[in-house]
Length: 178
Length: 157
Image 1: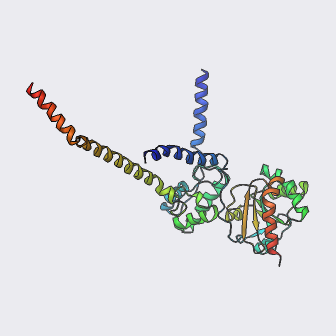
Image 2: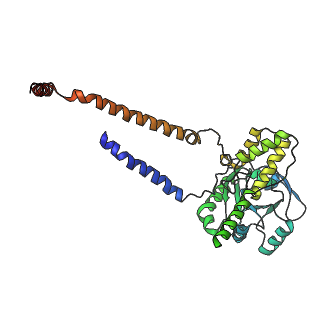
Image 3: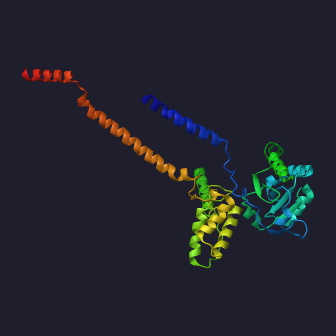
């Protein structure tokens, strides 16, 4: 009994050490999204290019990435070429131009190429709010029925795509096949 | 002199922090102002973590304040407004987390640890007391006889 008690501080130390060690590698800015598993919120907003009004019906039917971006967002610029490459490979990407000036957005798309099949203009950030967006870039993975299946916060670079996200997207595509 | 300048600069920068995030809202009811203050204090800014949305200057915090103001105007109650935020940003946005299986440890952990400590101390104290009470009884019959004998001897001397 006494012997066993002597080991107790060591055991407590080990448990605390493991917790703290893990804590070193956790990113506190990474929040679990409350939206995963929920349907994409309904919206009725203009398109970035042209006068067309877009609604949720426009983004249904295919699994896709919904990328929240803005010209004010510095890291979006880093992400943009990667999105271009993905779009070239056939990945379906929709954009939400979040709290931006439309003229700037148009200029950006003309300058850096447009990877978005549909680009929603969310000047007021209402759709962003309903999606629980707290910064940009953020990327949502939706399935063909418009359910949010996953979310990635931060810049999608080639490594992140290869190691983490490609498989998730592929799973959604496979699922959509009859 | 240098030190004074440094102190003044530091003081000024602190003053800047204290004056963060002021926007003007006209409330229809006086009670709404108090509720607005309460809610913005209780909700955490998702971007600039560890600041509530009342004193954060992040654009998202301003948006959330605007949203809370709008919902107050619509006559929503506090629970509805908090649910709206939790639906979008998760339990994380609440400084006062809801009581559920995930947060039970958070709520009861400290009280549990305190209780454990009290029990541990009680056990240790009791054990010591029992040991002390045992001391007179630790002499065997033989030893006691010898002790009595010795005591008698000294008395007789």
